[in-house]
Amino acid sequence: MQNDRISKKEESTPEMKKIEDIKGMTDRIKKRRKSLNYTQEKFCETINLSVSSYTKIENAFQRPSLNTLINISRHLDLSLDYIVFGSGEGKREVSSADKFGALLKSADSEKLLYACEFLSRIANIE
Image 1 (cartoon, rainbow, N blue to C red):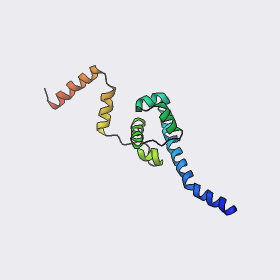
Image 2: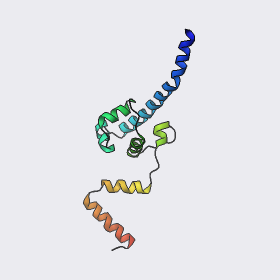
Image 3: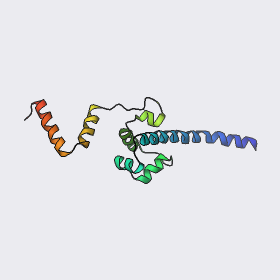
Image 4: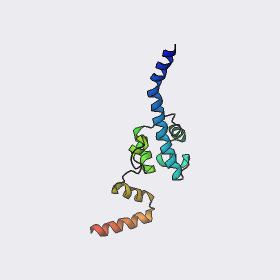
């Protein structure tokens, strides 16, 4: 009887490890979201995910898809290694294209027109 209990505990150890890994991942996401002063609702709007789905992810009831993880990584400016494994610096490497894309998304139409004129002059394009 005693041996049965021990073997059942040993069998559940890998599953418990998976739960701890998921919880660690979601804790890193939640900590960064809060440090950027995002509410769950506002962050969900930003990553285009329902609040209920995101809440399940953040509370470790649901694993995020790879696409969702990538989206979260981009918006929280965290590397996937850091989110999933807790390793590395945390900050993801941001390409020039990502930076440029973020600038374009945040600009209003007047600033976009000015940027087009500026880039045309630099490239000598009429």
